[in-house]
Length: 98
Image 1: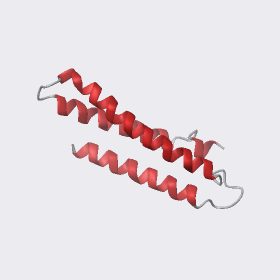
Image 2: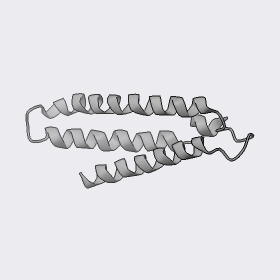
Image 3: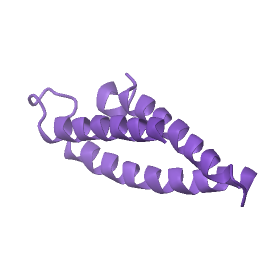
């Protein structure tokens, strides 16, 4: 569980940094100087959280009702969260690719 909490904190830090950068672009030539990017990032993150939770609930049914169900759910949350951090920090992420 500690690894999942650490990954979640990393995601929160990345997301907060993106939101801050999008709210305060460095100038008119900054590719992030478009409020639509922030609006869509917020919508995507909310949808992703709902997807992650539903997907991990589904994935954990491999151990439905057993002692491993919580472990399976936690492992899924960790993997999904790490993947989201990679997606948000990728050079071709929308806020970086323009």
